[in-house]
Image 1 (cartoon, helix red, strand yellow):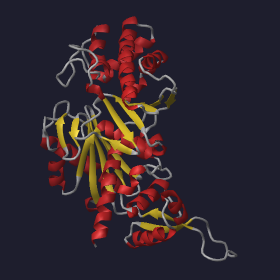
Image 2 (cartoon, rainbow, N blue to C red; image 1 turned 135 degrees about the horizontal axis):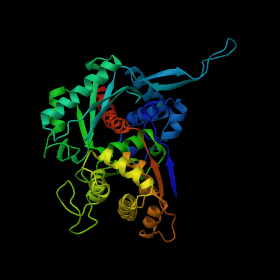
Image 3 (cartoon, helix red, strand yellow; image 1 turned 180 degrees about the vertical axis):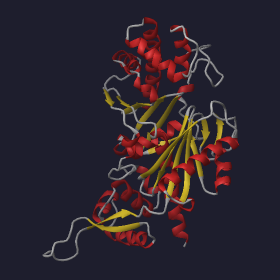
Image 4 (cartoon, one colour; image 1 turned 30 degrees about the horizontal axis):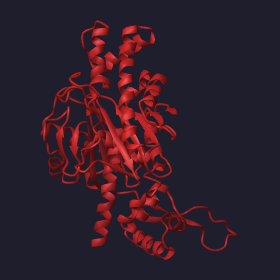
Amino acid sequence: MIDTHPARSATDVAAPQQGVGPLLPGSQREARPLRQQILEHVRAAGRAARADITRALGVSAGSVTTLTSELIGLGLLREVETAAATPTARGRPPVALELVSEGRLVIGIKISDERNTAVLADFAGTILADAARPAPPMRRSLEQTCDEIDALIDAVLAQAGRPRKDLLAVGVGLSGMVDHETGTVLWSPHLGPDMPLGAEASRRFGLPVLVDNDANMLTLAELWFGVGRQRSDFAVVTIEHGVGMGLVIDNRLYRGERSMGLELGHTKVQLDGALCRCGKRGCLEAYIADYALAREAATALNRAPQSPQVMLDALYAEAKSGNRAARSIFNRAGRYLALGLSNVIQLFDPELVILSGERMRYDYLYADGVLAEMRALTLVEGREPARIEIHAWGDLVWARGASALALAAVTETVLAGARAT
């Protein structure tokens, strides 16, 4: 089964909503302090009464009363009336709790091939400002990358009129293999090898800078702001300048033992096959990423190579107008995507697979024939096939996912500091 979600603009992504963050607690919630669980539940709900918290977390009313009073005293929660009191009403109006969002800011940043983006978010996850800057058409050094991050930080803070002292953390997402625990970029098409980006940026800016693979950032965006809020297990496959994958298991982002798993784009689909930008041959990415399609488009359209976006738009227009060579390129890419998706389903058995990224504008990649081939390659006897959804988010969603990474870290830091006082 496949659902297609219409494209969402940057304004849509930033629109206020009733709470942010996962709505399902997951079986791992016991590993987090109850005070943190309460704070995260209130953020996810937007507003929550104490009785609702008690029921949702399955804890005693006394514990909730005690801990919410502490959180109010620490300036992290506040009471709000849920209905206006009337002159004839007796007793105290009904109250709920909400986060105190002011004064604690995070920034999420996406480093990309052509355009870097950033969003500024408050403690409740509301987007206050966004910015975009052209990316240099080359590999960047560590210093250049920090300069790009610095410029984006300045831009979103200036737009919102907020001081740097209120900024508590920055999340950064980019393509490649990233050791999230250390913030080291082991390989990326944008940066040099073995780049300690997290450590250097943290030293330079004097605050935590968390770095992760961009597919994980998009997956966090689904988990915090999209359909993943109400799902405990799902997979995300992204097709843009590369091919990425994110996986949520038991309501938590899964990265692998060394924080570098799920590199779907670099799984091998052809021995001695097409050359991938990672330097190896036969990677899935070498058949369906934008640079791979643009490489073939130059031959099919008899044009000098141009930017991947220009080439792909021209190729798509030709395919839609009936050009056989153009259609064959998309059809071949669709077959390789079907192979990759069947492997994801066979390995992880997700109920839902979300296909996302800029290239999902090209409907050949998720045509009925592609999905039929995916199902034919997958053993699903006796079970419902995995549900496939297409999410064509706006460009800022990657940065917003990075803001969720920073927000999760800030929540733990703020609560740890409160316990120490």
